[in-house]
Length: 436
Image 1 (cartoon, one colour):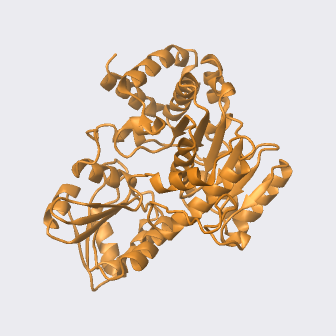
Image 2 (spheres, helix red, strand yellow):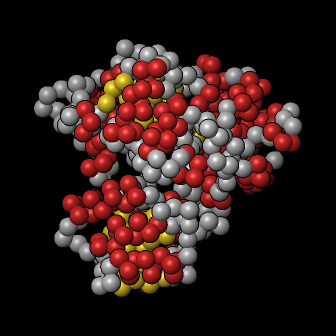
C-alpha cells in the first residue's frame, strides 16, 4: 500500500459520516489491544482555544523532558499533523502501516455499524502513541465531548477551554446544552480545569463536576484572578508567550492550571514552564509571517463568532496603527453573517474567496454582507485565494482569516507547509444530530 492509497482509504471512510457514540470506538480499540489502557492523558474539550492550549501543554511537558503525544484536529494541510510525538509528525510509512493493520479490524463490524473516519483515526492514534511509549498524551476532542470518540479514555486531568456557540446543529442551540456535551469528558474523581466564563455554561460544568466528585479549577474572569497568574511561576519571572492575542494569555493560564494540578504526578520546574511557553508553536492561529518582499501576512482561523471577536481585539490592540487588507472565506454552515459584521470595520479593502470545500459559503454573498456591515469599505469577491493574493501582493499588511480550510490553503501557497494540500478533503464529514 502506498501513502496516497492509505489516505484514499481514510477518505473513503467519510461515507460512514460521523456517528456520535462510544460503542464502536470501544470495540475497535479492544480489537486493537486496548492501547489506551497503558497511556496517560490530558483530555481537552471546548469551543475555541483547544488546539492552542494543547500546543502549550505539549510544549511545557516536552521542555520538561517527557515524551509527549499530541492528537489534534482538524489538520491544516497534511493529515499527518493530527498525530505527533514530540512535535514530529507521524511518518507516511507509519500511516500506511497503521491503516493496513486496522483494515481487518474494521471488517469485523456490520455494514450498518461500520466505524467512521474519526473513530478509526482515534484508535490508530492510540495504537501509535502506545507503540511510541509516550509518557503523556495531550488528547483533543474532535466535536463535543460526551459522545466524541476520544472519550473512551480516562485522563489524569480534563480541560474545558471555553463554551461558545458553534456546531449548534449537533451540540445544541443553547450554551447549557453545548456545555453539557463538552463537560461530558469529566470523569469520576478526575480533576478538571476550565476557562469558561459564561454563567449558564459554568453552572452546567460545576454541576457535572460535583456529580463526578471531580475537583474543579476555574481560571480567568470567572475566578476573579488575573488570567496569566499561576503559583508555578516564581515571583518576578514573567513568562514570555510566543502566541499573539490576549485570549492566548487565558489559554496559557488554563494550561498552567492544568500543569499545577498534575505536579504530584508530573513535576515541572518553573524554568521549564517558561521555556515551554516561549517555544510553543501553533500554525494558523494569529500566525504572523513576513514574505521576502517585506509584506506582513496574519493568518487566523476565526471560524466562529468568538474567534472573530478575538481576532478583532488583537488587531485593534496590536495593529491599531495599520489598516489591513482582509481576505476572508467561510463554510456555509458557520454563522458567517455575524462574523462578517464583527470583522467588517477593521479594513478598508475586503476580498472574499470560496473555501476549498463542498460546504463553502458563496464568495459574492460574503462580499455583500461585508459591504452591508461597512459600506465605506471596498468589498469584492475573487474566484480563488491565489487571485486575491496576487491582487494584493503590494499591500503592506494582509489578514487571511475565516475557515481553517482557507488558512491551510494559504500556508501551502506561501510555501510554509511541506504537503501539497491534497489531504484537506479528509476534514470533510457529515453528522447526524446528537441523540439526547
